[in-house]
Amino acid sequence: MKHNPLVTLVASVYNGERYLRECLDSVLGQDYHNIEVIMVDDGSPDGSANILDEYAGKDNRLKVIHKANSGVCDSRNVGIEASTGDYIGIIDQDDVLSHDYVSYFVGLLQDNDAEIAYTPTADKFFSDTKEDSEDTKRADKAEVITGQQAATDMLYHKIIIAPWNKLVSRDIIMKKNVRFQLQFFNGEGFAYSIECFQHAKRVVRGQRKVYHYRVGDPNSGASKFRLHSVESTIASQIYIRDILINKTPEIMKAWAFSDWHSHCDAFNMIVGCGVEKKYPKHYKEIGDYCHKYASRAFSAPISLQQKLRGVLFKINPYMAARIINHFRIRKFQKENDS
Image (tube, rainbow, N blue to C red; front, side):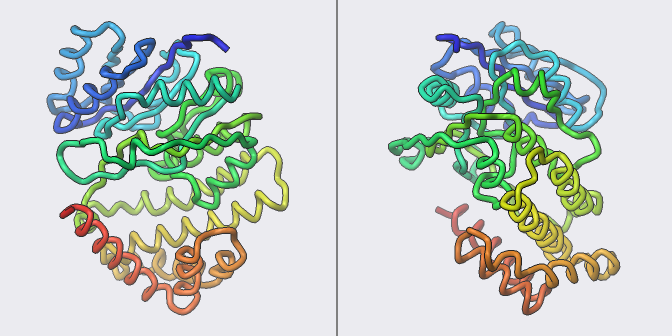
């Protein structure tokens, strides 16, 4: 392993001008300097392109690709294809990195001779600007696991089902042709991460929260409901099942739980946005599935809170969705006020 490997960070940018400067400042302000930052402007009609060009003019580590709008998956793939780094990470345009995000992950990779480094959780924040919390600076404990175990953990939702919060060896992504699947609007990061894990022999898991994820207001969901988002959430699970390399009973049980969990997430979207009458077929079919397979949560190695989710969906899916959405909004309001 190289002593000072080049790390590429890729982001798709679309109408991101509100938070883009904050994101770029955190990325280009890393204490690890051997980085390549590729920002793909996905045909943004706002001022994002100008901001990207401004920053690129000040720092030659930033490469900007302007193209016609084609969606986040294609834009990320364009960035991956243009990358030259030994390790590749995905970030979102409105999120923020701790100043030692890259050096932390590179240290994990080098100290443990691993192909992928990740942390299972991220630091969620709700304000317009992000300040480091004490939790992001806590002591770390690294653990080396197999890629198969990492994939299993993600299927049990013990790892954030997103493509960020990880650094992945270039060899895995390029030699195994791992890319974002264009057919998915939701679940694309889940599928990408599972595919990466499946090809890794050694994965190192840290515990620090060095990725800061900006959370949107769940109350605004009604104005953002998209049927294809619901359908994509479910369809991505079929893709994940099909790409599993070693279909052991253990990982297939984990997949069955994830499939049920994703149906519940889709059902929560329908109920939370109040569109059950507009889409009665989806409401009934997905709700019936959540009810029928709720027992998958009972024997899963998950928290009591997650098991309670299974109990609620077994009793009454509509009631379960209303309760889950209620507490999700309350949690948002409480944390946003703190």
